[in-house]
Amino acid sequence: MRETIGADTARAINPAPVAHAPLAARPQHAVQRSLAEPPAIALLRKLLNPTVIVLALLACVLAYGERLDSQYLALAALAFLISAQILSDPQLHRSEFGLGELLRHRIFPEWVLVSAALLLLAFALKVTEEFSRKIILTWFVIAPFAVLGAQAGLSRLARFAALRGSIAQSHIIIGANLLGQRLAQRLQRNPHRGVFKGFFDDRDSHRLAGLSEEQLLGTMADVAEYVRLNSVGCIYICLPMRADPRVMQLMEELKDTTASVYFVPDIFVFDPIQAQLAEIEGFPAVAVCETPFHGMNGVLKRASDIVLAALLLALLWPLMLIIALAVRSTSPGPALFRQRRYGLYGEPIHVYKFRTMSVCEDRGPIMQARRNDPRVTRVGAFLRRTSLDELPQLFNVLMGTMSLVGPRPHAVSHNEAYRKVIDGYMRRHKVRPGITGWAQVNGLRGETDTVEKMKQRVEFDLDYLRNWSLHLDLRILLRTAAVVWRDRNAY
Image 1 (cartoon, rainbow, N blue to C red):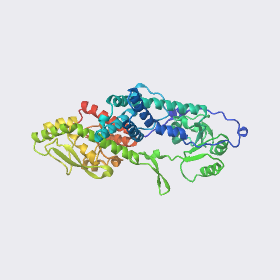
Image 2: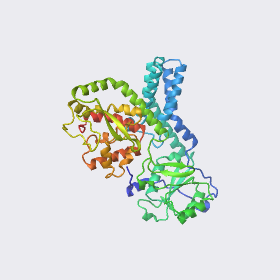
Image 3: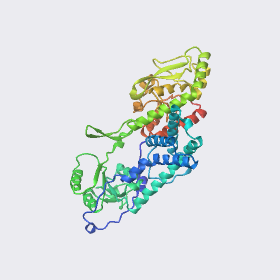
Image 4: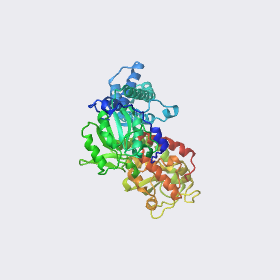
């Protein structure tokens, strides 16, 4: 979703006014530091979660009076490695949570995924009998709460260090425009990175909606001297990146300081999806439309798909066998139905489903199923209502053509029709299609009989791409079960 900010939001920025001595009275060689996160805090953020997971395991072993044998040490090492890749780094702008926020915290679904991976490895290696069940169960229960407590403690430590001045950094923003105000909000949410002192802009304060005299520190002509005399560690330039004489003059003046300088391009005008920095043979670039599954995110997504799909198939294969027999015995035709869809990057794939109709349409115009559709068989109606017809797509997940969670694949004929009338429609194909998706758990499951309904579905799909996380995937999977139970839009 694109963000907007108005006068009320701008007033909420409200950086704490800083009392400055007259320029001539300040030391001429104040120490300037970079805005980069302090190494100690960065290291703690990276190692905190896996370390707490290991300590929780060791505490459980000792609490039950067991010996700390080699199998527990091996489990601890494995848990550290998997947790380091799956658990999200702690966010330091929050140290307290309400009950509702606590229950929705990402640590719980992420820890479920870590636990599932460990259990799968234990069964595969046939070492389950080597561990005490009471120790493992206790560990599975207390570990996420131990992580939450440690994260709250680290957040308080970072805030305390910032208040005590241990993190003596400060930053300013040049350009009090919409982009600059958005950035100021982000900076103020993380005081451990330093103190946001205010804006510099050539416009008068009365022309800047919602900004006070205290927030506007001066014009661009005042920046260099202010930086030298106030230990400013980092400068963010939120102005159009062109050969502006003001910017060129400012860069010349800042050569006499040690402050870090960043240009912040206003990529929000492009409605970005997974915007990120990149380097192409030494040339810096900004990606404004990219898949969320690059680098380790792609590894985590694929690993979670394989682990969960394998577990589901191991649990559900008897049910799938019964469904196949029921489909074959109640209507003529195959048990499985294969249909062409668009997959990752718009490449054609074949999606498997249990046959629910008396016909197997896969060419030319395809009519979506409607309420009381005469093509739907009696068994098929039940399968469609409960989404059990989608279970064979678990094989698609294992083959790599689909994911458990992602934009639902549409028939090829529907894709060709909608891509011509809905802006950004094909962007949803930057990821693998899913068995379930963000649109489906938000009331857009079943027939899309109007272009407006399809636009809403596509907007939810793009919102998923912008905000993907393992936490969001697991949340969608849990909500899918509830939606299937009570929803009547599928027929």
